[in-house]
Length: 113
Length: 117
Figure 1 (cartoon, rainbow over the protein chains, first blue to last red):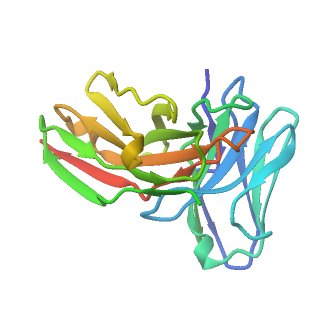
Figure 2 (figure 1 turned 135 degrees about the horizontal axis):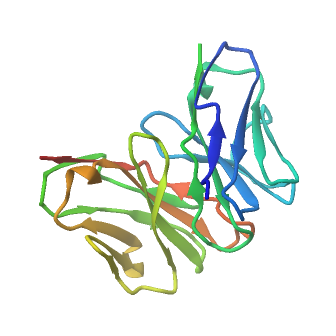
């Protein structure tokens, strides 16, 4: 049973460009959340998708957007990249509502130069 | 507002020593959930434990134990007889009950644990 998978693992982009990160949730999971983890810090919640809709959003600008597909996989898009967007982006999946534990992927390391 | 504090930035111990990682949280909700995650160098966050606010029983799982005290808003994590493989960054996290669609965690800044042979 595959866990949460994220692609790509590493990415280098230039300031001002756009990037798309992908996440496939653990089998049986229908809720996907995205987190940004800057170096040396704890993950920060970006947003969460359930039933193909954004259900909650953290304190991130509109440059950060996402999508969830009918198969529950998800994309995170970041437009007009800034140097400060350099971070590890983590995807977490869980099963529906309730406080079950979330399973995290290994993340995508984004470097903006 | 939710907040999680992990005052210990880095801890180094020698193998077989016991070590306690501290976590203090702030929330206005009466129903909430607390978690501990381990992050090895590979980057993936590994779930260790979940505790709801109504269950103050301490828990032991092998070499791991957790002490939850609502009176002091603390949820500390102890590793007994530490091993080199325990070296990682450990995060404490909080999720409030108003989060109806699953995990919207507030993470602490993490504690980097180094277990030396």
